[in-house]
Structure formats: structure tokens, C-alpha cells
Amino acid sequence: MDRVLEPLAQHRALVEWLKTHERAVWDWYGDAERQGRDAEAVRLSLLRDTYRMDAEGHPELFVEIAAAKEALGLQAVEVSAYQAQGDGRINAAICYLPGEAHLIFSGPILTLLSSAELRAVIGHELAHYRLWDQDGGDFFRADRILHQAADHPGAQPSHGHSARLWSLATELFADRGAWLAAGDLETAVAALVKISTGLPQVSAKSYLAQADEIFSKSKPRTEQLTHPETFMRARALRLWADEDEALEEAIATMLVEQEGLDEMDLLQQARLAELTRRFIGHHLAPLWFRSEAVLAHARLYFPDFAPAAAGDGLENELASLSKPRREYLCHVMLDFCAVDPDLEDLPLAAGFERARDLECLGHFEKIATKELKLKAKDVKKLKDKAAGMLAAAKLETP
Image (tube, rainbow, N blue to C red; front, side, top):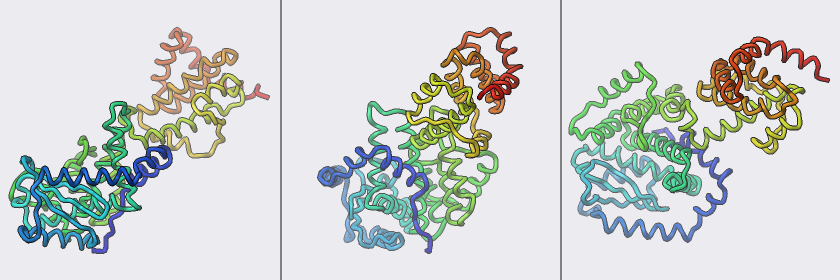
């Protein structure tokens, strides 16, 4: 196989965000002494809660482990295998330690899968190791930070959404390891479907056609917390195996593109904050708008705020913005309408004209009427003459 496993764009972006914005946390999780204590705890837990398998007692399993290791370039990694006790769910998992991969099988998975399908599942789990071990363990460190932050009692929704995005992207990455280990798309998909359904016989070809049919009728987004729906994983893997140009767009649609404000992850929050900065900069660009009171209020948003120059592509971004986020910008504009009484109705007039451009004039009118306690007739009058007021203010500005 000449394909190379590379972290998804979502992985790299979250790692970079953590390194940049949470440096103290990042360094704390890299403490070698803590990592050593955690490793010993993992080993003890595995011995206590599982049955450890070896090559002498389970030669067929270790043949597939060796083949998967070679396919993923992990020949130097020590791989141990365990059967979970008291867990009837069909599943496979991995515990990562530097230089060690601990595979844990649950339920009757070893008897359900063919040897080639088992190799695919092992390849999937070892792909987790490949990801977590890259760049000196940066991706494993990010994995721990994101999931432990999401589980903290004081976590914000963005922490949970970031951990979810990370997990979903990781499963798509690991599915590529299944393809590499099996050397065949249908084998990898068959293993995936067998585990999700428990059926001893499945048709991967039929399931791939089923996944394509679903996508031909809609643009589904995953609702799951850790693993995308099976049909999404099957299609994403096919697109990757075929080196299809639609892959990145498909992944973005499945995992990332959320339109509202309540389901944003850390990356989306950062992007929206930067868009807000630029939007305020453009909104306050007219000289008449740059009073001391207004600029002081803008610096409450961004301490280093400065009005923006035209030509940075903002208008194109605004044109493709979702309705909830355009309405959010209406609230931002409203925030500047009563900051400086000396400007009288000009800020509100500017809000009306910008809201018109954003195609959310009705929403801006509604919130302005309510929050500023305006009469409907006065709002209509101001709305009708807003463009003329702004043109006159521009001419009168020295």
C-alpha cells in the first residue's frame, strides 16, 4: 500500500489551538513523572480486568497482529492482547503507552470475524497508536486534555464539542488503518458492519451502495458522541481509498459544519471571535462612528481593537454565513446603538442598512424595537431614511 496515514485537518488544528491558547495545560500534561505513574496504573488495570492472551495459546490472533503491525509500519511496537471479562458487547479497543499497544477485545468478536476482517480491526486499533505516537506524542496529549476537560464539572459546552469532534475525526483516521491492514475496502467495511450489527454474514458492497443512497438523498451530519454512524464511516473510507476530491468536503459536512451558536467547538469559537473583530472593525469604519465612547466600547470586545480597512474579503464570508450567526451579528451591532448619545440615530441607521445587507433586517428591527424601547412608527420612519442619513453623515465628516 502506498497510502500514508496522516492526521486529519481537525486533529492538527486542535493540537495547534491547545499549544497556542492553553500552553500551561499543555506543558502540565507532558510531565514525564505523571506519565510514568499513569502507565503503571494502566498495566495493573489490564491485568486485573482482562484475560491476557499470548502467541502460544492464540497463534491465529498473533499472526493477524503481526500482519497489521507490518502494514502500519509498527514492527518495533510491543503489542499485547486481552479479552475483556464480563463485557458481552462486540468491540475492540486499545490502551496506548509509548512503545506499547494493548489491544482489548470484548464479546465474541474473535469468533465473529474472518481472519482478514480481524486484521482490519487490529489495523483500526493500531492506527490509534500511530496517531497518538506522532510528533512526540502530541496527539495523545491533545486527546487526554480534550476529553478530561470535557469531563470536568466546570466544562463549557465548547469543551464537550471539541472532545466530540476529536473523537469522531479519530475514528475516521483509524478506519484508514483498517484499510491499510486488510488491503481491501470491502473487508474493512465488512468488519465495521459486523461489529455494529452482530451479523455473522454481511455484504460490504451492498452496504457501500446503501451509504451512497443515503448521501444522495441528504447531507447527513453525525449525531453520535464518539463514533460517526456506520454508513458515514463506510463512505468516508471509500472516498479516502479512492483518493476522491470530495473527501474533505464530505468530512466537513459530516463532522464540522454546525450552523448555530450553541454547538461550537473551540476552533469554531476562535473563528467566530476573529470574524466578530473584523465585522466590528468594518461596522465602525465611517469616521463619524469613531467617537471615544464607541471606540472604548469596542475595546471591551477586543483590547487592541482598531477600525478595519476595506478589501479583506469580509463581505464574501458574510454572504455565506448561517442565519443564526448573521442574527448574532445583529446583536453585536445593536450593542453600539446606544453607546454614544451624541451620535443620536446614526448608529441605529447604520445597523438597519447593514442588517439589510445581511438579509436579516426583520430580526434587527425586532430586537432594536424591543431592547431600545422604540415605537413601531419611529422605527419604520428611521428605517426608510437610514440610507440618506448615512450619506449625509459621510459628507459632513471632516
